[in-house]
Amino acid sequence: MEKKLESVIRDHDFEMIGLSLMEPNIFRSLSIERMEIRHSNFIAYLLDPRESHGLGDVVIRKLLRDIFSDSKASTRDIFDADELDLRNIEIRREWRDIDILIILDHDIVVIENKVDAEDHTDQLKKYKEIAESAFPGKNIHYVYLTPYGNDPLDTEYGKIYINYSYEQMAEIIASILKLYGNRISQKIYFYLSDYLMTVKRKLLMNDKLNELAVKVYKAHKEAFDFIIENKPDPAAILNPFFLIAVRKAGFVEGSMNKGYVRFTTTKLKEKLPAIGQGWSNREIFLFEIEYCWNKSSAIFRACIAHSDDPIKETLHEMVKKSKHYKTPQGKKWLVFYSKSFPFIASEMINEDEKEIEKKVRDIFYEIQPVAEEISKLIEDQIPYLDLVLSNSKS
View (spheres, rainbow, N blue to C red):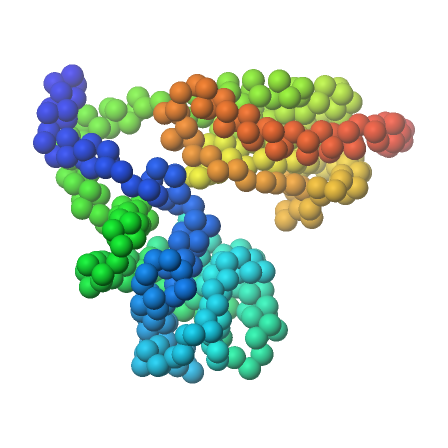
């Protein structure tokens, strides 16, 4: 095995991969390769003719050609894209939760961007209703943007959404670099090149470097499999940092699981009955941070566990008084508050300890007031909870 690992290090192609990964890329340095919001921001920037990229309306017209040539855009055709007056165009981001909204004189384009996630219940229906209500009389075109042009999960409303892909976006950017590369500023050229590489390498997995990686893996499969078997476990490496932050914030740890840290207060741990179903210590209520399994985020949640005991609903009624309360989506596990924070576990383990501590501390700086408010709300109602428990026993 040692000889096989040595052969990997001496492999010219493997060295080429290392050198390529060391090349600067603004999108990789900001760790936003798979962050949906950041992709939407950059695409919206390119689509706006008034922005500082110096491309004018080139990008928006190329996009409109693709959209209008689709059979679902029944009121338009490809030739309309070059004839539209774009002087009054408006590009909106996150307007009423719509990722990208393009407003033209007679047309509206609604773009729902999905990098890793999928559309959730009634999401596409909601955007259709919003657009029809806000822009009566206009031609409305609905676009579902994914890496490969996948169909939405919502098959009913998916019928009106035009499937669009990052492959097509990559083709637009590649053509601009080829045709307009000598006419745009060097800075914009580098931005576009970096973005094209990011899309191809991280979203589409069809960059030359991806192909080279497959070639090297096939040539040294046994060595790489051995390396993968012994690679650091992000969940185990990061767990102590979250546990320290829990204790420093004045909380006590609850049931643990790989990639999660769960916690509560001393009083709630003592007073709340162990009647939950799912956590190893059977807690009925806990805060948790999922820090490893989401590719780009750490997710903080306040959760009431599944239980057949009536105390579950009593506790649910208590937390409804919190200013942070949001109606849970599920029926068994009642997650009544959640918030995501940018956090890529696989990359964080490569940082030094001080940087990891700072990142975890920043998360707790935001979640601690929420956890304290919810905890106090429950603690203040413990006497009522005790009364409910005694009545249920009798």
